[in-house]
Length: 75
Image (cartoon, rainbow, N blue to C red; front, side, top):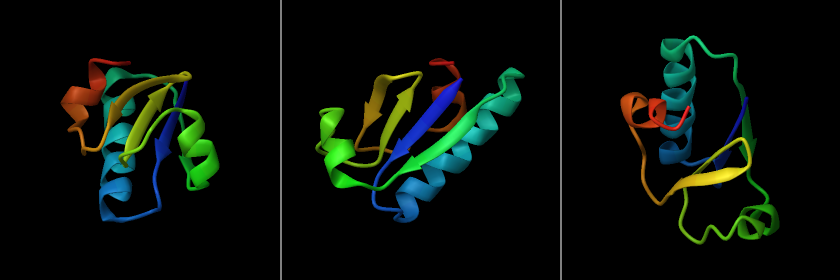
């Protein structure tokens, strides 16, 4: 499973990454967390509000920091 965090690397992006890591661990899933900071690549996902969360190529959230429990629903 590949989880991408889309954003500039701000506090919200970092928090979303940590929550995604915690959600994968809680679900017992192996996940590669990839941070995407290139705005052209972020825009290619149709994300205009960061942070964005992409799970296996599908955008599941934009513009907010989801909790680990909320992210777990998408895994």
